[in-house]
Length: 308
Image (cartoon, rainbow, N blue to C red; front, side, top):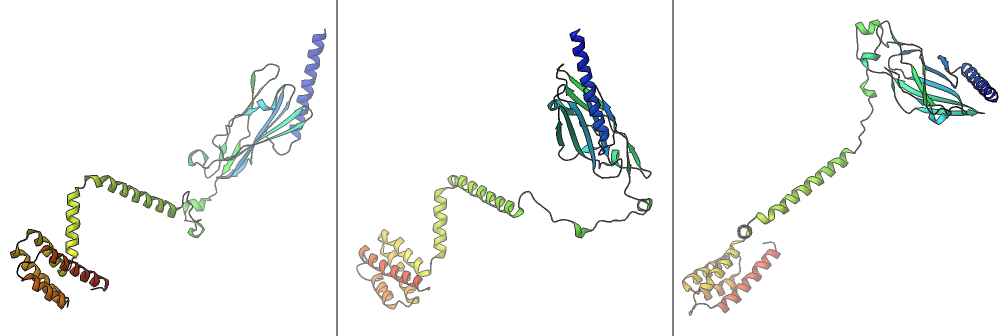
């Protein structure tokens, strides 16, 4: 007998909670969609505005009223099926508690800009959205239950009139085009790419250095220096090249050439000394040539300093 009374009391409590939920939903004027009630929760869903133009943003609202003694609000889930409309942006979830009753509101921003399923015809287009499915877990049972709520049909209209379709015209204003934006600054990207290219070239040169013959490099440097020498420097180099041989037949002409180049640089005293040494008897020795070479080197150094 007590069990029967307990179950009867439970049924009365559920009925009162459900009635209060239904009355609360019906008294909510924000959404005019259909209301579906069960023994445990009341659900209302709607998409507004019911009449819209192509490309407009719509708002889907799903309201759920429940008694926390039988359904935990954390277990309530709404399946996001609003085809052909798509959710664009963050979903807003609100919760309001009043006694043992909880009001949950889910708000979805919707858009539909695809040409096929979204583009209305000249006379407009009617959209029948899928039903909204709300699932929850009953505390006493532990199983997930699903409640389905149908949505009111929507009407979509075109932004273009018949005259616009018969005589289309370009209406965009290029002056209103916003300035381009970049994820990475083009200047910074160009500098980074140029620096990376330089590092790659430097790395390639470093790898090629061991493959270059040292003798070839030395000969190339010597030839480059020889091309940059003056006639006086070449004459001095000729004297140094013939002196180690000790053959007066080669040393004397080399000294005569050096004397001639010294005369061209207006170093007459040194030119006379060089010519006297070239044709002296006995032939010049290394000690005498060494002193002459030092004097000529000083003259060459002074000429470079003076810019000659």
